[in-house]
Amino acid sequence: MAEFQGTPDGDTRRYVIVASRFNESITSKLLDGATDCLVRHGAKAGDIDTVSVPGAWELPVIARRLMAMGRYDAIIVVGAVIRGDTPHFDFVAGECARGLMDASLEFEVPVGFGLLTCDNMEQAEARAGGTHGNKGWDAALAALEMSDLFDRLGGDEDQA
Image (cartoon, rainbow, N blue to C red; front, side):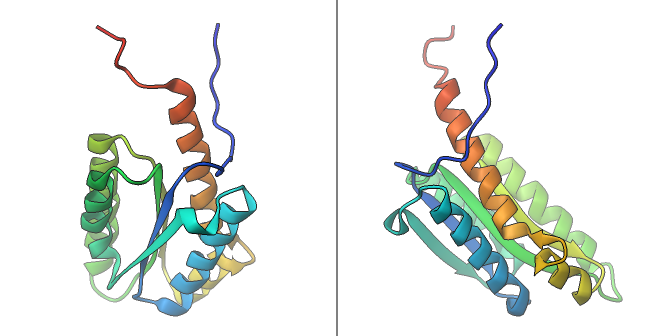
C-alpha cells in the first residue's frame, strides 16, 4: 500500500503571497511570517512574489487570476476579518473562504489559508506572532507541503 505525504520543501518552486491591507497592523505580521516560513524551507527570495489587495473580499478574485496564470506552485493568502456589530463579518469571511476553495479546486493549485477570523483585535494579535503563533507561517507551511504533495502524486494524464 502506497502512502503519500508532502514535505515542506520550497526549493525549485514558485509561490505568491496575497495579503489584505485591511487591518494592516495584523496582516503585515502574517505576511512576514509567511515569507519567513517559505525562505526557511528553501524557497528563494526571487521565487516568492507578493500581491497586495484592499481587503479580504478581494482575496479570491486575485487568487483566481494568479492561478489562471499558471506561474505558481501554491498561493498563500493572509488577511484579518475582525467581528464588528453587524453581520458583515460573516459574509466577508465565509465568501472569501468559499471563493478561495472554489478557485483552488478549479485550477488545482493549493491555497495556504491564512485569513484570520477573530472576534476582537486581541485574538488577531495572538495569532499574528503572539501567544498562538503566526498563522501566516502556518498557511505557508501548509502551502509548502501541499505543493510538494501535488508533485509527488503527479498529474492525471495517464488515467482513463
